[in-house]
Length: 113
Length: 114
Image (cartoon, rainbow over all chains, first blue to last red; front, top):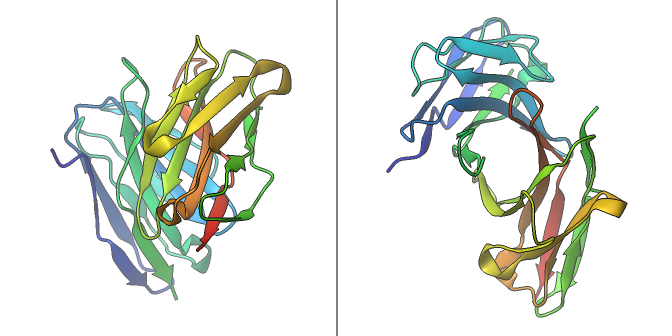
């Protein structure tokens, strides 16, 4: 059972470039989340999804987009990378039906230069 | 608005000493509370959770936490710390009004002295 898988693990982007962070889960969870983690700031919610076809903004959505075409996948898109988006990004999933435990991926360390 | 406060950014304890990490939350309804641990370069792993019932909950790795509604607190404790407990610890509250969203504290980094 793979859990939550994020790719890539590391990436360096130039200012203005775009990229997609991939996230997949195999637990049939309806909820999926994207967080960014900055030193001393904890985890900030970027976007979340309560099921396929349904997404909503979190605390810090500017500069990002998401889609949820399947239950398994929840990619995060950066259209015009900026230095302020240098961070570690975590994808997580949970189910609303049982114990609400969130399962996290290993993270993607993104540097924008 | 819902929020979670972890007042201690860094804590250093000696191996074998007891540990308490503080967490205060602000949430209007009955909260669902969690503690997660993050080892360097890793994602977050669940230590324990509180939904209802007994206010003292046991978790993995010998951790426990106590929910105190009157103090809006959910402090994490361990009687004897091991060097492998060095990590960052996050308290979180899950909002249950409509959708489930996790709100995390800023984390407490634990250093363990040999």
